[in-house]
Image (cartoon, rainbow, N blue to C red; front, side, top):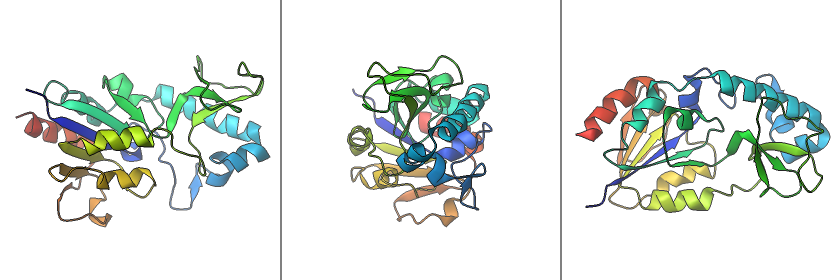
Length: 229
């Protein structure tokens, strides 16, 4: 008998509980920077060194952060379900918690990619990516992060996984970033949808959705025990 498929769609909220800054504050800035300056191809073209410095700091913060109770709880589901993590986060906290099947929609900050060919992806050994670090084609290595205005290469893979879900667990995302937010509509008719977020009351969700207004680190350990039964 096959295991039921449980797909987790995770966002910045679960990483924020580990001390990582969420993508964008109420003032429209990302840690004091205009998002367009540090997360767009145009920003890279204007000042690539500023973009490198920005992500070098984010990379260092990522390495120092630790998985929280929410990340760890998701791993406990694996004996009971065929678990896939579809994450909008660029950190590696799900990996370090022990989750096995992870799809990064927006890239991975601990990797670099060629400026000429985005299919050329490499691990970064330390925190710093320099302008003198080049790919085999001779172009500068940039952060392996999907910026505004760029295609989301893993979206098709994620859509297929979600379309086969028996349970969709949405954690720590405002469902405001597209195309990722559309995944909640890709589930089959029988799929149970559970949304965990402190601001869940502010989300526009249809009647099929079970809502849990709490942080991931608080709600998930309890929910996972319930689902495991």
